Length: 232
Length: 326
Image (cartoon, rainbow over all chains, first blue to last red; front, side, top):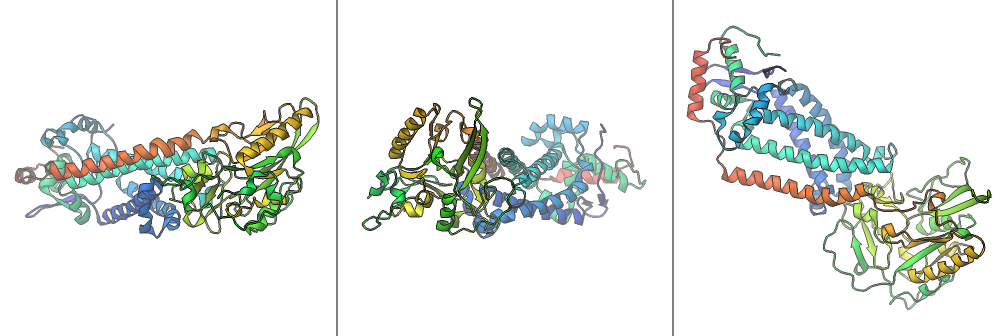
């Protein structure tokens, strides 16, 4: 297991006053927000069919029939854009030893002592958890969603299997919504993250504070000798 | 006013007058409504009704299927013969009831017995379809026991199929709504019996109050026992709270020989876990997660970049010697 989280394509520091640290490429940002919109629609339409108290959400999609019809199609679209997102993000999200140390210190983060944390690479262990949790949960949701897509696949499997699939689909959806809450919350709590996913860049101080190892990798690159360590 | 003509097992076969009878089965008669909490109690209690199907008297003529098609104005597709009298080959959104034929060799007598069972909705006292349904008011249960699909509220998800212990509902590919036997709720509401019972030439299908139907069944069972069917009995399975469609079976000890009629039907534990703890605890967990996030966001200190961080970063950039800190 390597100890280095690689930087991603497009990551760089533009020297100047102030220096600008490029974090997310335009295509990554566009794809991220396509995912975000699709996921939001999936959550709203899915929840409306999950609990009677949320059935009113079907009005957003033009009624129950439309909600039932459109939910799986948005799901297919989400899976396609998510696959693209995974190809963009997976390398820098591979787990390494320092991530395990980061998790051991995660109490410090919550208590506001981020300076006591081990230095993080492009993504910290929390972000990697969110990434892999979503990879697993979206895969499970897609597989079980196909099984219970009554319009096209009701004859594919038996009823007992469909019951099992709908239960797993619900549990996985609850898990995915939990991860989503964590993701959105962290992006808002860590000021500058949201802006980074919109503009693509962060300040040098932001990179220093939250992803110091990554910052040092980029600084080393900017330092002249185009050292290829960790660059994919 | 309750239906005075119900108290006759053969009432459905006759022509009970409808005058003087107040239509029932309105919104005030609901005892259960899908995806609805705090349903107001019904304004009155109707007498529970039941359809009794005496398998031993059935001759497999399918008059019930024809009557069902005619009354409900459905048009089942014409299919091809695949070597069985059963037609169509399964229940469909256009065929709410189906004669299922089984050729069974009785191991005790080595006689071939031709078992014919009229399949269709059993109108469970504890309906799994209604429990699984996510759409408010798409499935209702009246105080007389009839479980009915209200198609304008149906969203076509097929959850009712997963909830049903008898594999009865079918979702139309054309209009995306689920269909099944209504026990002719529209006829019963005005004092008539179901169309199938009316059409049955041998009165293998009778309709009346559930109590009367049980009494009628007891007579039939005694008769069957006197003629050597010692395991004859009533199929009114307790696992779903009893049903409002019951069978007299000559081999009631093994319902499964009648085209896989479940021996002990219950709502699947998977469905109960899905519509029970998952639904309740899942919503609570998501709500709690969102609430904690909002509260922490409002009251906890944000994780901001400090001037010191910016200064440190700039110093590091200035001082950086390639590769020395990686």
